[in-house]
Length: 98
Image 1 (tube, rainbow, N blue to C red):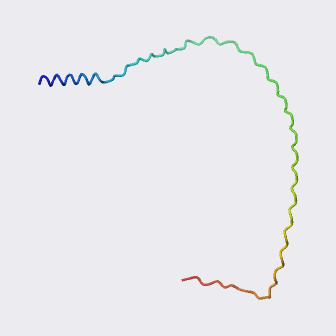
Image 2: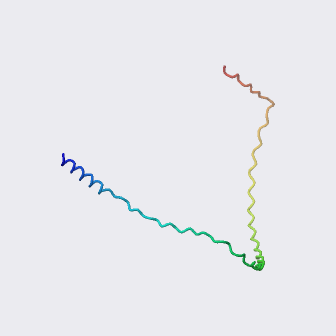
Image 3: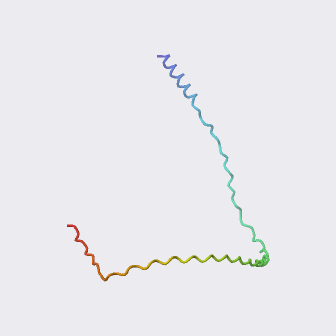
């Protein structure tokens, strides 16, 4: 029984020693700046000078006119159709299926 307690205590010690604990890093706190009372107002500054106007740019040249295309050919005239013999054909629609 005594050996069992000794072995379990030794095992617990080794298992706890094997754990890796991260190091604690202390982050320094930045000092807080507290503004003091406001001082007297300074003198008013002088007004700046007005800028000069820019020059107008030069006008560009006109581009060249393109060439005129050729005129196409006239197509052939079709033959005259036959005249009818005076008969009129009337197409009667069929009855729908029932």
